[in-house]
Length: 426
Ligand code: ADP
Ligand code: K
Ligand code: ZN
Image 1 (cartoon, rainbow, N blue to C red):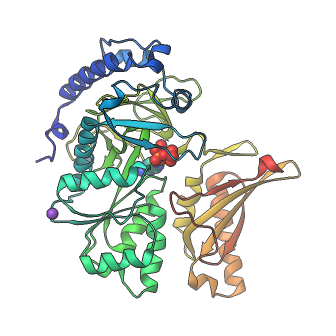
Image 2 (image 1 turned 45 degrees about the horizontal axis):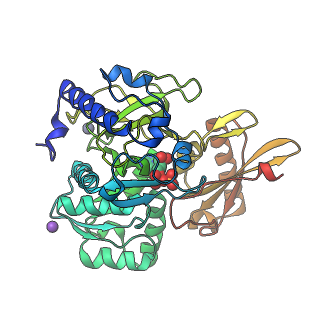
Image 3 (image 1 turned 180 degrees about the vertical axis):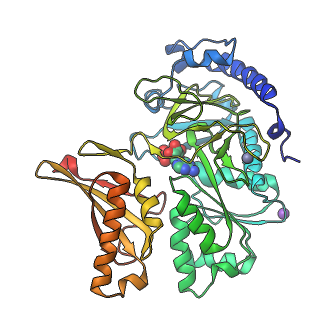
């Protein structure tokens, strides 16, 4: 009934496998120069002892650049990926052939959850190259047996042409790009609902439940949330099943904990905090207690689909993208959640923060829909007022809302950039 027998393991079988894999991981990892410096023990008696192991930070990876965390001979490695380096020097991840095979198998498992199968035609609209998102899905899709089109992102005209003429039924796409592609298809006279498309994998960047539902509505498809990070192979760490209520984090590959980012204490299931992951099924560069900076929680209830791999909730943001506005904490995601439910505005928005007379001032620039743009001045004022009121009640701070014409906000080729903080410079 499951694509991969490991999906059907019981709690005790899964725990036993995780312990065994964690032990093998420690035996290997403790020999790497970086973990020797951290005095990583080479054994573990029970999973309860994991919380006594040292954390691994992004900074540790930078300090050990390039091969400090390597736990296998360099000549056994066959692939290198690197994270974008938008928040500092790049880090590199290495893979043996076994790592690549295991990762592909896991990606195939993820995609199979949605019902995708060897009869599907798959257009991979995600970046290839050093970024793990495109290649990770590519090999997984081939493993699953889908006819795979490695088109990559951009060039909406060509995307639409392929989708229309090749009978594409499954796509992998950034949620922010799904909206731009939709407008483009409409302009080209293609009704996305008429396409044979039935499934989209969306992820790699934070997005709200409202945004998912909107993508589903516009294209007439099911959209599944996908989570991963290059330090943990790439995509495939956690993925939604057909229940679409949280993402199963594959506990035969990864050991997950939620910690309080301030006190660093492990929190019980159900509580929100920072996700910490150990890769327990990697050869080249296993990481122990890696702090992802992603904020989520482990959903304590079992999933209706019958898989016992615990689920994580939608990522609320990252510890490093939280904005503090005059002492009030908020995440860009809260803004998205609020505006998506509202008539007259689209999905594209940016946030600017300025210092004005020693106070933080929050600006939210939102693109209007065509209908709203051609409406009367009084209608625009009413729209602006209701947006301001809704945002103020969600955020607890009073933003200045600026409505702008569709297509006038900057767009990124990769993950969407939402926040522009000018306070340091003012
Ligand atoms: P970079 O850190 O350079 O963006 P990655 O490609 O490894 O490199 O990005 C991983 C990060 O992307 C995650 O730590 C998380 O913050 C974000 N991310 C990935 N998938 C999702 C998702 N489904 N929802 C929200 N955020 C996600
Ligand atoms: K096929
Ligand atoms: Zn499930």
